[in-house]
Structure formats: structure tokens, C-alpha cells
Length: 240
Image (cartoon, rainbow, N blue to C red; front, top):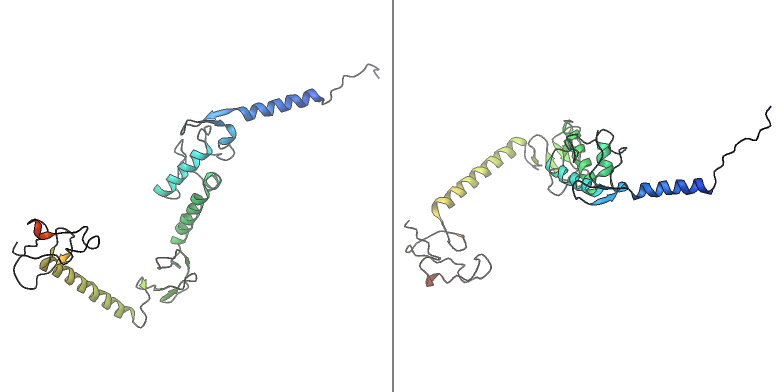
């Protein structure tokens, strides 16, 4: 057995100082964002672990990445959102990490609607103030569990209380015909005031007519219209 003294290594103050300097150097490293062109610490960029499916460094800062996702979610299908640097489609995990809370909520909403669209038993509420939906087991009347609004699942209209589907369809068809006839009558029997564009119907008298809203400022007419001061304003000639 050798009696020669052994060389010993221990973590002294000098080792600690070296480690501290290495950490400090890492935090001082910066990168320039290719979108806003600002130089930011590496901590201001998504790490590779957050975007593992890409074969490039992340050169878009966190703020610009979030802004990119805001634009993408409003312009594209929820499942077609691309990386700001390449054509890679971003995964749900990446979007959940880098998107703003509002964008992430919108993404979840759209993805859920797309999933439920493939379910024939899933119906959305017809109320204009409700975005809820639920599984409907059957029957004509869908009753929203969130707001109570009802619609007919056969006619795809608001529930027609006291009418059969056939009666409701006939009533709506008659209503559309009446509205079309009314629009045709207005088009053929009235003229529009050239100043406020209100439709005017001549009952009798001469062709010279003055809009009844002539002296009502800032209401149906845009301003006070003294039609008789100019022959080109406010005169509706039905002989044309």
C-alpha cells in the first residue's frame, strides 16, 4: 500500500464563483427578434422544449409570437395555425403555452365546436345571445340548458308553439310572399327623397312634392332642408 499523499479536490469558493459567472453570462446573452427587431434576453424567446417539432431556432420573441397567434386564430381554421418562421402547423400544446389567454380561449372554443360538429346528436342554441350547445337525445323541441331558449330540430327555426311543423312552414312561406309583395309595391309606387332617402308615396295632387321631414333637423333628414330654395333638392317628380 502506497504511503504517497493523494491529491484532493474540494468545492471551494473559487468553484462557486466560476459557476456564478457562467449563470450570469447565460442571462446576459441576447437575441434579436426577426419580427420587432428588438434585442432581448434568451429568456424572452420560446425555448426549444416548448416548440419541439421545429428544426430551427426560435427567433420570434414571446410577445410577437403571441401577437402572431392572435392574428392566425382570426384568419384561419383553428387547426391550420402555422409557425411564424416556417410552414409547420402548431400543436395544441404549443398554442396553449405561447398564446394569450384570450386567444387560447378562442382556440378551445373553435376546436370544441369542430369536434361536436361531427356529432349528429349535438345541437347549438339558436338564441342570438347564447353560445351554448348540448347533446339532444331526440324529439322536436330542443331546450337549451343554459338559457332555456327552444327551437324545432326538424324545421331548424325557433319553436313554433301551437303549430305543427307543416303549419309553421306554411305560415313562414306566406309571410315571405307578403314581404316580397310589399317590397315590390314600394319599389314600383314610391320615390325616395333625394335628401334623406325616405320613401314617399303620392296619393293625389300635382307632381311637385315636399318631404314631410323637411323641417326636422338631425332626425330622419340629415340636416335642415329648405327644399323650395333649390329646384334640385327635395323635389320628387312622379311623372318621371
